[in-house]
Image (tube, rainbow, N blue to C red; front, side, top):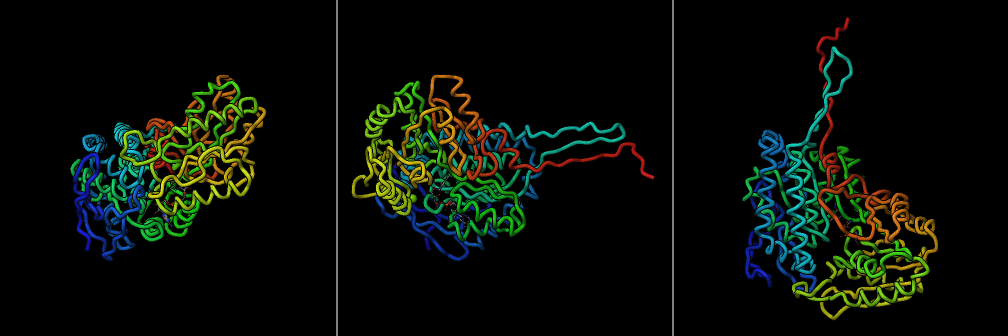
Length: 497
Ligand code: NAI
Ligand code: MG
């Protein structure tokens, strides 16, 4: 049996104690079935350690713990105390920033300095939602004088949360922030590719003083633990970030079990639209960041790039030079911008898309090959002259690969931008205010960036139109997704005969 803690080491922090158990009721425990699985370092393809795997039985235990906490101490705690706990958790995460970021870089492969940015965003998200905890208000509703009507926002109950591997800690914070602030309890399942950082984070939950069972964090596989959570009869809400395919499965499981509430964040194929009058250097830097940040493993990656015809050739040539400057390599090297893709599966999937782009006759401007001979590294890749119906223009690649095409008019740009079944994000690059606003308003996307891309703030909501999802994360809007609205009618003096 694997120990519940193992000594690991990172180049930044040196040796540290890595928890490997399931975090249930504020304790690390082995799984009931005694199973474990290996965690891979994507930079070296070597095994880092093994962690305990949750199966259906462990999901039952975690859900029971969350239910008990919900019906007991957590529900009785004044909301202002929830704020104190969330702020304490943020402070502890801040004190452990370097450890959290280096474990993230080790397990996920993202550059350490990027991981440190993620941890900063985790802390900001927790503090933002701590601020909301005691500001969840209802209304009084004036209907008739002999009655008194009011509404309340109440927590939904036990929330199952299933997160992906692209931002392991940040997705955790986006999920638990609004859920805990509004008084729910949580069973969160991490992605099987990246369980380590959340387990380090779990040590802080107990230290912060959360009652046992309020936040449970389990490692396990989608079709086993994830599926058990989605179809569980005592889970009141399920929140998911990941693929459209699994999003559908989760909705179906919710429908077939207890009709638990569902929110989904399902990625996209977000357009970057660059007009003739854009500040071309800035536009290229933002487009570069839009597609290559986090190795293209962003739900909102700007993977379709439409450039107005007058500047098209100049743009492609300058973007090629910019992309080739991105440093690819060891996540712990201070100059690294792009590390490896998260797994062999993702590496193979992306290389398959690159092959399809080549076979379909798109022009490889740069990249298009593996980087190095060890680890899941892929060269930043640009395809130009891509036709609208090519697979690389239509499907989410989730890697450092973009597709460029030309457009003529504002109307063309809007039409091309909206020609996708997704609707998560988009960006518009222009100096003309009316073009910027006209296009922003016409794009069917939950987020539109003007002269930037991939900027997210805890205060500003994020989520998808169309097949990109249901519900919103971040901002005030996320609170609605974690509360039930109750109306109370009080009879003061109305008589019935
Ligand atoms: P995935 O959707 O399979 O995995 C995301 C999470 O869902 C993981 O925690 C996984 O364990 C869980 N899961 C998988 N099957 C499940 C099931 N039947 N029931 C409940 N939970 C389940 O994504 P995967 O395979 O890692 O990546 C495939 C593609 O999905 C990527 O290439 C990308 O296009 C997209 N994706 C989008 C993300 C986003 O941020 N929107 C994040 C990760 C992947
Ligand atoms: Mg890993």
